[in-house]
Image: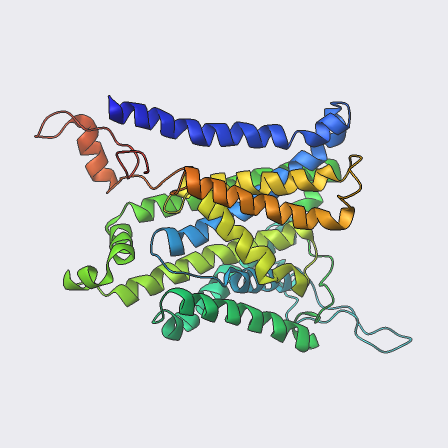
Length: 399
């Protein structure tokens, strides 16, 4: 009876968070007098951003939630994935200005035109983007492997300092070397997949559909992997590396694999972010505004739970979205436009504190699941009698 009551209570928390966030993001509709035709584009933008951020949270959850790797350099893989994808979908850089002779837009690559292999099949609308996503994942994975060799031998705060330092180093390289990615100036006019096949009013909905498919695919791949023997070793490494070594497994090897796979997922997120925003500049990849945000989403949603990572992206960005919309109201004099960002960060900080006090393991805690084969046996009822309920990892409320 107590277990059933706890399961019901556990389901109320995430459902309440979903409903409260849904009410919060209705602010634009209320401001427009509930004219949904005028606010649909804002809702589409909100959903698009949540889906893109969910990809980063899934990757971070593989690293931290399942393996315990304290990666505070998400911005590094975000940057590498975004810029790599951009140079694979864009054409050659424009020629220098005929008057001043200066190159206002410079970047390496520009392979987009070369990947239009079969014009009759419209490959310019989809093939460069598939290649770009694969290359973004590959380059991010290679970077993660190179970082893992020295960095994953560190623990805790030292690993966090190392990874955030690497992220800042990469951003500094982009700024100081103009011929790589146009320095501090943005790379403009990044195209989007299938954009030439739809009108501008229709394309936003098409892109949301593509992102739903991508997030769904990543979710299934991660869930299948985590419930496999490989995923069980990751959880063992997270809990006790010494005991894992005693069982004949190499913790460093498995940590490296999880770090690389998580970084590859983040590289995919960077690619689709560039396709959506159409422009990239180094300011986009500031660690405080990216890494901190993704960590907040995973903590609020629930580390060690892929569904929780997606829920965290929805809830946290819902508050961000609401704070932006608040600027459209007549605010008191002590709340100026310049203070909105500070109030937004304060609200997010309070959200983290409330979740840690009320739900220390997040809105959707890690589930006590071993493998799909074991789950099927439990549902059928094993030799020991009827199957026990499959609930959260903790069978009693947090104290």
